[in-house]
Length: 264
Image (cartoon, rainbow, N blue to C red; front, side):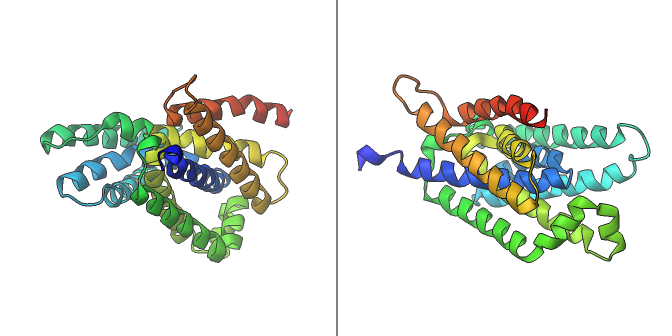
């Protein structure tokens, strides 16, 4: 069994490698990718509270992640008339939730490995992490199966979708929930800071020249799988011996020139 110690981490890396780009593509089409960045920082207070209450940290992370996204959405509505007001609100809420999470750790007298939370610890993955990722992937699959056409319409023409009577707020809330599940499930693999790279870079490459959302989703998933598998297998080589999460994040950055070349 010791010869295949990397089996579970590799399976988790592959699942996260598909899940994050799929979610990121939906967010990018909806012009809401920054929401993933906000949620990834807003999960920290929930993690701290869940650890203090001896609950599943993932549950706490999803609750505060969604709460942060909804708070930012509500507050930013009042600032949309001002240039840059939207971004200022989102960045302030992001920093506030991150700061609250850091403050709760000493206040609640708990131990949280901040490095693992922020940058991932894929080699320490367990069955619970695998189950959490499978549930997030199932939630995303259910959303796509039931709301695919509505998501396409909303991404192409948000104003027209609202005028046609589509439940825009409900769709965005569902996407927010799926994003929160994705971020929490990706904590083990790449951490809450680097997850945004795995959501964004494959989606950027996949959307160039895509003729449909379905095609873009498939491309993004394949690119994410290649990045995660390649980063993980490279990281565990004795000659390299680096943390897989940060290495996957660096590989994501290497995709950006490719996306630029494909647009040219």
